[in-house]
Amino acid sequence: MSRPVTRRQFLAQSSCASVGSLGLLSTLLNLRMAGSALAQGGPPAGEDRALVCLFFAGGIDSYNLLMPVSGSSVYNNYVTTRGGLYDAVNNADGLAINGLPLAAHATDPFGFGVHPKCGDHNALPGMQSLYASGNLAFVSNVGTLVERTDKEKYNAGLARPRGLYSHSDQVRQWHTSVTTQTGALGWAGTAADLLHAGNQNAKVSMNISLGGNNVWQTGNKLFAYSVGTSGSTLPSDYNSPYENPTVSATSRSAIRTAAIDNLVQQEHQNLLDQTFTQNLKDSIEASAAFRDAFNDNPITTPFPGDAAYVYPPGFTSSNDPARTLGQQFKAVVRSIKARQTLGLRRQTFFVNYGGWDHHDEVINTMDRMIDVVNRCLIAYWQALGEIGMQEQVTLYTASDFARTLTSNGAGSDHAWGGNMFVLGGAVNGGRVYGTYPDVALNAPSVVTSRGATLPGISVDEYFAELALWLGVTPGDLSSVLPRVTTFYSPGGAAPVGFMQA
Image (cartoon, rainbow, N blue to C red):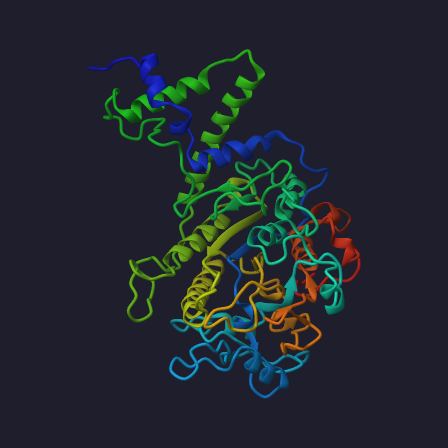
């Protein structure tokens, strides 16, 4: 027998905790922008574009991601400083490795290699091959800077970023580009504040996160819209209209659904109540719209975690360490495919892959984790090809910092400048940008007895190249990257040169 929902049932079953799931809360916070005037202009004319940030949380030992190969003095210094070539029996504390050789470029000062786990998988191109085909580039020795600096200034305690070597400070600075104070706005968020006006009738924010709330996508008006690998989620136990008509009217699901529907249908005198109710209603509708668009845009490319994926020996869909990251990348591609349904011509995506704080052990852990990254990028690249978006999507990497060149006994510690890579059809790939430092401990670019490198390229220059490609105008660049003019004059030649005009 059906019973009306009582006030006690409403209060017991429909508290704020039951109403607010992560996806709903994210939507509620950032979909206020629906009717806002976010910019006078919009994205430049042309194709849709998306920017993907792959963040290596913890601080990746990136001098074992990109390294010199034998035949140069820099290689000899690399082997010496890293404590010799790793050998599980004879030199277990050595951190040097021999990488896969990268295709030579006319600008190379010596031969470069990439981590041995960056080869092809199942005859599909891995990072080494993507570099050779011109779709992947490395940016060497990039990091947080207050100004151009040298060893003398460093030793005098001058021109150091706030909280250098601190995880929390350096993560925030890689998200904001502001190195002199604690910033609350991320550069992707402020870029979206400018660009979102070009997304006509957008149903969700252009900033979509597979890694939860983050500073990078936080702007004055837009926030990260958090989704999962299966898309967006509605409030827990919420069904409206009822997906199962036979559900009991006294069930928890029915009670919560009736309570939320009752809440959003009320007319309120108080402006705060009106705003909350409207935002809640909009957020539910937007979550449903995203879910429908996501579900209507499947892809066939198999990713780690899928039954059809070809796994390395010993791995299956249930034990492959790449399955979680792989499914996140699959969700990124499906969200890009759904962009027209969602009314988005510009998108940003945040993917967080943690666990790089390798104080205790580097070699074997990085072997496993780089293999995860490489195989996920192989599937991601194939999936972008499936939807015809390889030229319009650019992925870049970031991390707290690099790690010390010297070994602490099989591990490495917090350092400064490091090596990152950029992947996409619009990348001027097949080369290393910036100056790969001489890694001898007495070299001009190396500070501290443990071997931290002074960055040669600032994060501002790195990010400026990406922001300009996404559609931020040179005149607006300083509002996105407040300290960019310390290193680059907007309107001139490209800051670094790794993106096509």
